[in-house]
Length: 226
Image 1: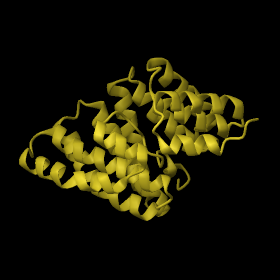
Image 2: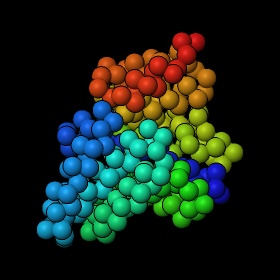
Image 3: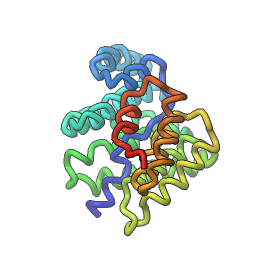
C-alpha cells in the first residue's frame, strides 16, 4: 500500500492565472509566496465562493510542485498541506467542478514524498479525487493527463506503469494538442519506457508550446538521444 501511495506524487498540472504559470515555469516559489497573502485575503472575504478558495489551492499546488522539482520534499509537503484545506473548501462549496477535485488530489499526492507512512491517508485522497474528476469530466484533457501522471508513479504490479501512463497521456494530447504539460509528461513516461527518441520528440514539442518551462528543459537534457 505504501508503494501505491506515491500515486500523484508528481504535481498534476493545469491552466491557472498567467502570473502563477509564469512563476511556475521559472521555478520561482518566492513570487508565488508573495501572491498568497492577497489570495488568502480574497478567500476570507469571499468565504462562500468556491473559486476564491480554489485560487489559493492552485497557488499552493504550484509552489509545492516547484519544491518537488527542486527536490525539497519537506517544503512541498508543508505547502501542500496548507493548500488541502482550501481545495477541500472549494470542493465542499461546488462539488460539481472536476478541476476542484483534481487539485485536491494533486495536493494530497504532494504530501506523500516527504512521509510515505502518510501514504494510506493521502494516497486514498489522491486516487479518489482524480477518479471523481474523471467521472465528472471524462472528456477533459487535463483529467486524462492527471490520470496518466498517476499511472506513471503507480508501479505496474499495482495496475499502473509506463504503458498505461503513455496511453492516458496520448489521449490527453489528442484532446488538447496544445497542452505543453501533457506533452512534457508524455515525454517523461516515454523515457521511463526506454523510448528515448520518442521521449525527446514529445519533450521538444512541449518546449515549442512553452519555451519558458524550466523543468521541461531539465527533462530534455537528461533524456538520452537513443
